[in-house]
Image (cartoon, rainbow, N blue to C red; front, top):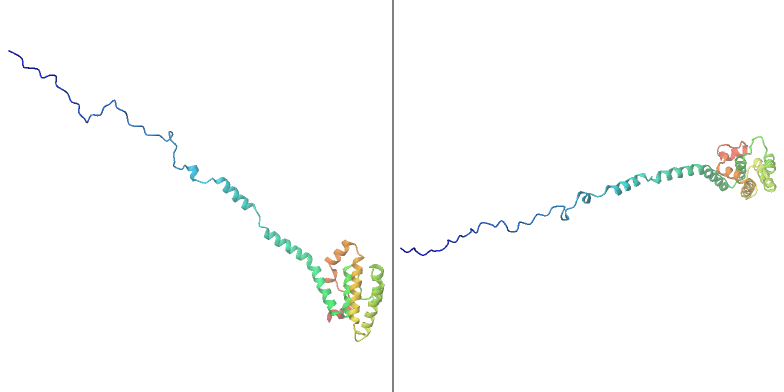
Length: 211
């Protein structure tokens, strides 16, 4: 009996859901060491503290010059105050333009120069002392002494303009006495006038003070 014809070898089909094992693998995820990161680091995000600290320290180290300048100005004013007061007093005497004011100006100049002005001295003796010891011009001193003696015994100033002429003589005598001094002594006489605290004792000066 004949055998039926063979249908051949059965074909085997592979499931489509099965992924081949020999295919390419998935790409590896790059690590942080393999590629540069765009995220800011801690050192870049935070500002450097070095320059800021140095600037703050420099600002704190600087001193405010205003207190120092204020103290310096106060010292200068204190040193110049005696000379300013004496200058204001001389200006007041010159504005009076009287024989008594002129004599007081000369007495103040003598006191500033360290010459003792005694109430026991007569105007003539005092004038002679200034000529002999302080380089006062003799002619101007003689005119002023004569005007003072006349004012001491007269009820008025005498001739018109006598007070102005006496003041001009006193101012000239003072200038001559100052110019004859050494620079150091002249600076002391002007800067530290003793006449601000030491007053002459003559009757004429007392009369001028009370006027």
